[in-house]
Length: 204
Image (cartoon, rainbow, N blue to C red; front, side, top):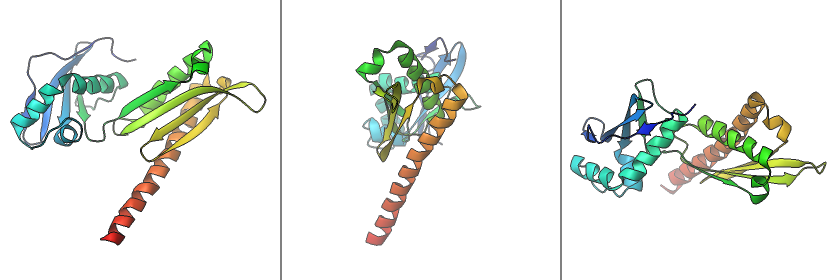
């Protein structure tokens, strides 16, 4: 269950961690402290940081506080908190965009199943998956019965599958199918990254 209340207090203020080149800021989740850490790499990649200077990093955090805290909130909701009660936001920051087709939104039971499956899938891919999108919709299966379709995409490619509503009612079954589908996308990503690496070596 996600926390019912997540707050980001002003005290103590954010601080620069010299030994880690990170900015640390506090959060509370249902009354329990969580230390949130954002790396210099992420601040440079997404939030305009130009120099690896402690004060510059703090200023980048202050200027983008709402967005950075939003990502931290998402991580806390997903339970991506390490045993030391820390949330780590890196350049591999997981951001998930979920869309539902109009036909699916009008199908109450099917829509609820996809919402639950989206959460399970998000929890599964973890905190270092990068940019990912889930596209859910309703379609007609081979026997003309309605099925639920899913397309998972990232910058390296996409994979798709269709699900019978009855199989989505089994959490263990859906967990297995979603894991295999995500694994297929990771294989595509791995092959493309390897190809880019080999191409770079050949050109070099």
